[in-house]
Image (tube, each protein chain N blue to C red):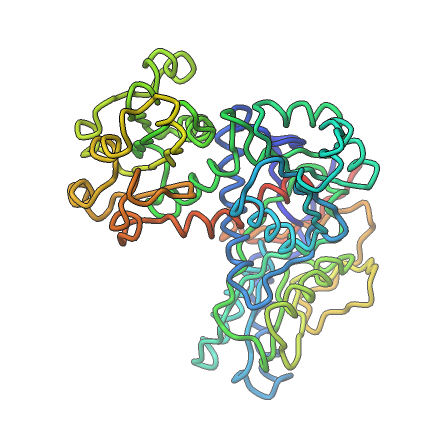
Length: 314
Length: 180
């Protein structure tokens, strides 16, 4: 007799972590540990989702997230189809809703969507009978990235509660930061956001939703108390948009360089959601330091996505 | 409402497991190639107890592993809330070994069917045998146990509960629960 989680009814969609309780997150992370064991086997596949059809619907470029979902689906024996806007009827003017209806008619059970418009997954969810997973929408949310970050922190540090996480860089444009704020605060972590004012905004912007969060514009003042430093990608377009005087100045004030790396100590985790701009927000030394877990994050992403797919479709 | 009746005491459970340990030894002409694999959750402590019994009379520690079969079940959609997936943990290479699957209750046979699939994904044992504490009948698949602690005729409406201290229960016992 398999024991069941009785507290939660089946979840239908995963669009952001705002509607996940700490218990549910905990259960997903524990399931992901079991999935990681499956991935360590010679035969990295279990029949759990045999016959289910998952569609990767990517309206925005992606390498790791798309492949990660694909590997996760295959490891659970589901059928997965990759759809990208380029080369599809989208170029003939088909709307998102029409595309979703078509995929539904073709028998899709789960849609994994990445879109440059925040909120697109909610629209899809309204017109789709199956489950929707958000793989990143505009600046809004990237829940599976946050879950894999939580998993990596828990695995490396033993717990999330009480851990001090410093999120560093271009926070105002970051869906990774927003989903991590939901997840980290719900799991009892302390969060500090740090970056230049133009990429962070005023503290009240953040504390209105997450009152316990700290905001700082001075990296060297907050660096020493961190247990985890999560550096975010700095898109080079931000400078052209006039938000930064120069990339060099950004790197000098907010880059994870060898000198700051030395001050962090060996037990502080260095994380990055990728893709990295090495030499801008993170130096090659920091990216390859023994306490950097950037590749582990990618590996864990497959296990965490398996856990989520199983929870929605199992 | 329901009514409960004890069908095995702690002592009877202990004797049944010691007997099963001897039978495993006898059937396989020794224990050199035997690996015990407990099906989570209650098969896991039972496998450990059989291993402890073997260590007592043979002075030999047989490897013990744990198998979670949730991802191999064929009845996911029928079961309501999401089942928790626990970790499979088998440190020994099972290829070429005699794997003795251990579970608490044998009923429809579907758990064992899932366990056989899970095991064959992990390696190719020479033989797979099945040990259960209670066989309550009502098989839905062509599966039988090689080692049985106690055969208990039941009605489908009844439920067998195996209580083990390792699983957080108050005492070791097997009870049959009858709806009234």
